[in-house]
Image (cartoon, rainbow over all chains, first blue to last red; front, side, top):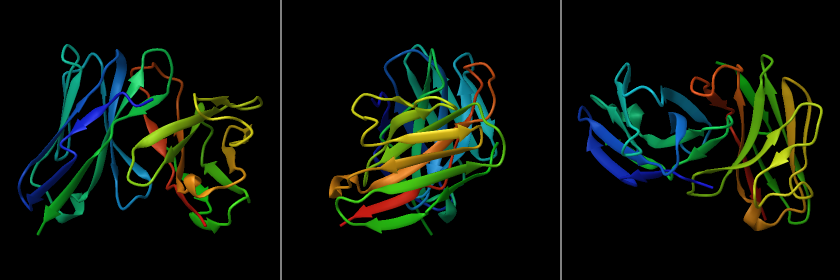
Length: 111
Length: 118
């Protein structure tokens, strides 16, 4: 079952602006992974943050993790039209390799 | 990472028939999974494809409806049987490429198979 909740459900921003989306979860995790999905196709792996990490960067992406609040955020800086997609967080469970996905945030970047 | 391919990429099937989806990985992988994404929804795990043994199904999914094979460490198939319009979804396979710590593994997804049942 899904344990992640993401907000906002949808986000519309102007090109060049930053986009921030949040993910909350309910149980203890080993890691949290963010994915991008374009037009209902396959998922592209963006970044993994371990449960003992608080912040991670990859290019224009910045991910934070607060295990005390059971929440994570994904920041996309200087957004581009190509960033238009749905973004999902997925939590890795404590005892196996399975992932539980959040509901996703749909991001639209306007030119 | 791993290069994952799925066949077919999309199909339109009639009610009552079955569709078999193939997932091929370019390297041996530890774990393979099958997910379903219903229209406008997030991903739900169907089962873990176990090499050489029966798949492990999540609650709400059964072998008769979703038989899975995994004959080796690079290939798996998912069959969706006795199709109904409610089975219209994107089906995705995913892999974990190494048996590293549970904190560090990354899971990669195939491009998905879009199934429409009429």
